[in-house]
Image (cartoon, rainbow, N blue to C red; front, side, top):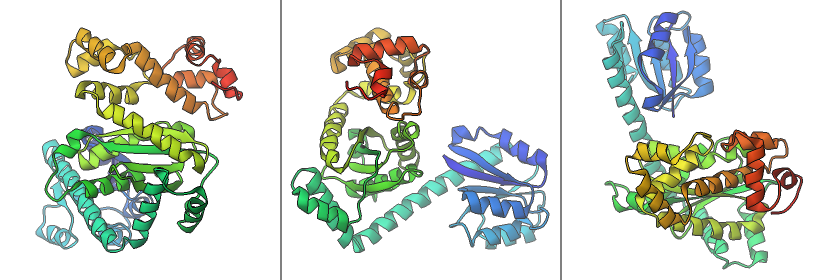
Length: 400
């Protein structure tokens, strides 16, 4: 989501701006408010909002002074002035400060909505431009990066001896931690079939890699690269496991938001660098299998990855949302996945449960709730049937 800061000394105005639009539907989140210019500056510097809504007349530092100061700490902030002053002098100063728009109070919903939508398009366009410029710079300076990426591509395909691999890991400063995870991102055929002007597959993969890395803030990144199939490989620390378990969905949301592209994402925990190659091959096989499904089945798979924690999730609900008959959907899932809806959903939930149980601090009943079971007893029964071991014994160090 894009971050928004609202700065106005009138609480009613701030509340009105917050309530006048459905910010979440517009992919915005109001992350800070400020009642004067000094507070606005401090909070903007700390939170780096994408969009700022600023009043001109505020205590301590007025809106125009605030905008001038912000330009020294933020990278080309997108600013909309909301003012009760319809004067040419203010508008002229705002123009010099390169504000995005100037809206008069009282704020009309249609006027603010139009300005925010245009601001969002501007933010996305500017981001894409920055990615392309960074990609061009990368091409000019890519000698070291190219060598690292080539090594990783060859290593993951088993073409580098372990002794040489160890030297290369040290040379490129690629470390490891006690808890690691591998994430693989693949563009869908739908995304690769239609390329917008100025985008090619290599540039698009580079853009996805950068956006995915941004979505992974909070996790220690060990390395990332693009493999020979233009799939993005991310290897990072996986702590905290509860957040890492939903990381694929976060990355998918970021890519859809910024690039309007569909991707398929698979993730897997790994114990050490030595496990990365096998994990990559396994995850790669799963991605290829998923990419060969019909669009409807692919949609269902992505839906379950996002909503598996909902205990009320049902085939009837999903069929209604995508507008096809439950009978047809049941037959299609059985035909392509080899499982009924409930069996496939159970697989997804148990896979997530196994990941969560790597954290020794999470109780079994908490795992059950996190993956969509209202009864710990029933969850334990399903888990034991699938793995021939109880969840409690599994957490204590048993093997499947």
